[in-house]
Length: 183
Image (cartoon, rainbow, N blue to C red; front, side, top):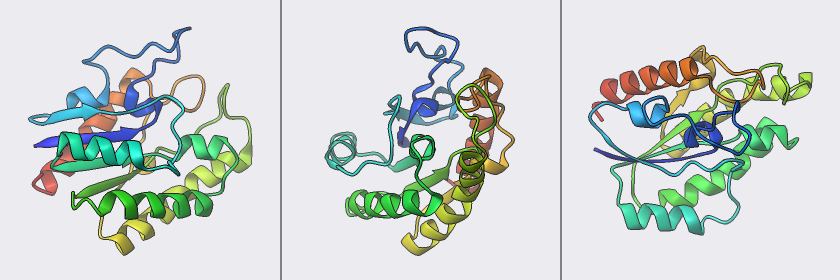
């Protein structure tokens, strides 16, 4: 199965220990650990839920994936948006890419933790609410859904990015989800 992953730095595989935006090695990133699948990693550092959908539509059309995985919202949270505002943006995005007829798996990002990039209780609280808003949205839109906020993903010192162990645990849950859904 060909899987196209749209996401932010945690999909890209950003290593926050680097000074120039480097990423974890191929075997560490969760996108490289989905067993038996061809994965197209379209993660971008800093990506928010897009308002302009042209890039995503182009990626889906040119790659013709069997499944589109979308995990976005973390940067929207750190930018001050509420879970409801992010879900509204995500709904428009899902409507747009959903028109291409590819199955979509909407993944709610892990809950943010206190760290160098996260020091505000409100951001952590909104982060914890995003899973419920995305679950409801996925049900309305007929998308598959996963709440990575319930997966116990280990974060690094910044409270935002997956540790190498976090990538491993995330990949394990994704592999189980894909297998359970016969994907």
